[in-house]
Length: 540
Length: 92
Image 1 (cartoon, rainbow over the protein chains, first blue to last red):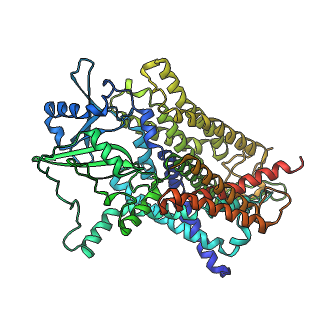
Image 2 (image 1 turned 60 degrees about the vertical axis):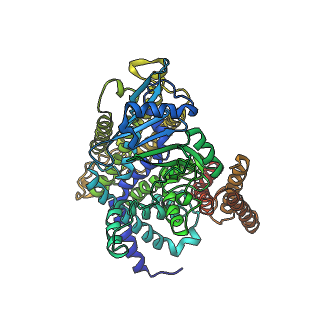
Image 3 (image 1 turned 180 degrees about the vertical axis):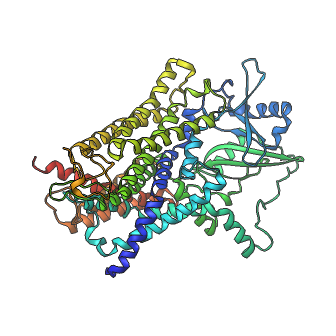
């Protein structure tokens, strides 16, 4: 396909600058997003053990529910029967008490003590998984949601522009260079091929991510426009069939019977919980769970209404049973969350997310390489300040994010015994490490900084399983859940040699690679870019 | 979902995407490229089998998305694996 050179140049300029502006924020979004694919297992691994007695069997769930409502009648407004209690949701019956805002609430769980008395505990889900998710959602910006989310939306728009402009740039050589990866003396060519290899075939994945992120950022204005244009009488929020009333001789079914009836109606749908809301004597119920054959527009589960007296499910809101338009919307968001295909698909999304992070990282490397001042007549010129600054930023921000996440995860098993406001501590640790890494990269330069920060990343990541190991021995208030979360420790352990290998190659490049580069330690980085070649000290 | 069917669809998907990479003129895995057309047909067949198996187990959109993500991942990794193999082949 032929495109005029001047047109290609315009798109190249657009691609370069939107990439430079948004690339590092997108690195954070993708790295944190890859980890967020396993948000629930991470939360399970990170949540301290509950003091509640083991949950009673589901056959006794209603007995427990009645005991809770007798002691805490306010729980009637929102309570749930959990089908498979886990470390982060350790009770058979849980309920929420509202806080100041819709998203602000306190969760309680209940069980029966050995003597049959009611036990109640304020549930303390570990906040660290939510922190990683927030970093993903807000592209790592340390601002309030109201400020960071529109910026994230702008970054997502730039991302979409970068994808389209990047595609136009490669179109003339797309067929010829498809799958090309030329490793040779031309480093710029090599980084270009690496960047293209990471970006071209995964373009559909990236387009979905970009477009869905724009919707996530701007859904409130979108709804406002819809309300003006499409729904003059207001969006039909929460308008659904009124709660069913019991027929003659009908009573609320016990949880185990509800489970049997739902499983019979929805084969393949794994039930997580039943949620009950009582208001002025009317009981509403819904069932939550997931059918991995269809996925869901939520991150981890779907939910739909349920008649608590007959067990009849209203499936119209469930993937696989939706109207075509709803199914299309469901698919759009399901593709962002990877909430289909089970854990196998989540691992594929982890790999795609890490590859995406590398796409943005290599974009910056390519920019730096394109501006490299090469050796002339045996004299090594100083590199441009812009290249040095972007080199330090690329190393500091990317590895700062990696080390920050590892450090805050490594603190997970130690903090609950030492601190009260865990969320603030996790956030504080992440940003302290992140900004220290950025500062370190600027102090040491991109080459040395990358080597040292990669080693630090290996150390911080190694501390994650060491925290669990300490938990096995019960050192310093740490804990470890048997079985649950082993994958978190194993993954962290597997990442350690990867970081060390990268550090080894970075060091080799720094000592043995081209001296006329920001990635070399052979000349001082603080050379005045305006100095003549003769003025530039060369050391070998 | 039947675990064996899932495994079979994943293996045929990986094999199909890999064979199509081997059929490409830019592939680095093998020093001698044998019958690109044959590899392309075989690869396409494996990919098609993978899609059919996925469609028999999952909703249409989830099946197509799973299939595409698998192929995208193999095709993203393939040039790097090929380049690694080419380096191993190079006389030191």
